[in-house]
Amino acid sequence: MNVVYCSSNLSSLLALKDKVAVNSIQNSTSLGSWNVHIFYFARKKYLQFVNKKSIYSVTICNFRKTDLLTLKVLFLKALLEQCKWDGIIINEQKLKIHFGELTFSTTDNDKRTIGCLNDLIYHACASLEAGPPAYHIVANDVLVFNMNQMPWNALGFDYPSQVFESLINSA
Image 1 (cartoon, rainbow, N blue to C red):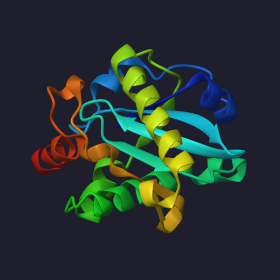
Image 2: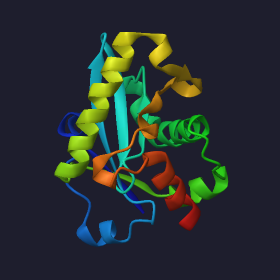
Image 3: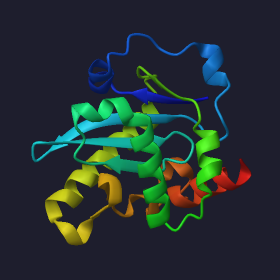
């Protein structure tokens, strides 16, 4: 089971009450858990997902409250689009098997991941402010920019796309 930890703002929007039980968290897949935060730019809602192990990020733009019902499907489609953009060869069926059970939970207060998430949101806002050469919006309202191609100190200066690709291949 994959767990997606939501920020307090998104948790209240999803009406999440409690954290997922500890024993189910330990059974997470080799791809690891995710954190997600909702942020606003130019009066539009955006969701920023980040993988805990690889700091691989996925951004969904033009998010609406009606999309809450299909959030799992939106996330999988956005992840596939981001992988295509980053040149990660991924088997869609294999990915659906790994994300078969996607559970949303309240925040786990992981300082490392939340810090990376805040940095990604800052860069996303800067890219949106700069205009279309700095980012692209592809199918399914996925905002793609080159954050997964930037080395991160939290990964020992590895690239999130390479770390995520190795996680997918080893799974």
